[in-house]
Length: 84
Ligand SMILES: [Zn+2]
Image (tube, rainbow, N blue to C red; front, side, top):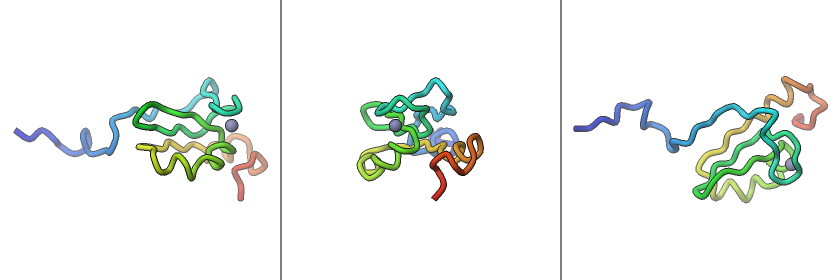
């Protein structure tokens, strides 16, 4: 019997992508995390700054990237560092 019905098994990962909160902190500098990088061996949290800095590295190994850097603009305006 094939029970793969689409939405339940359709994703590439079963890891939950719960929203990041103020309690989630960048693993590098301790600032509020806006990016969660899911790796085969665990997770890393990054602020927008360090997410950009490490993107070339974790892009090769991450199984999922949960990016909430858009919230920087919504919450703190264009001066928060997420603007180009
Ligand atoms: Zn950081």
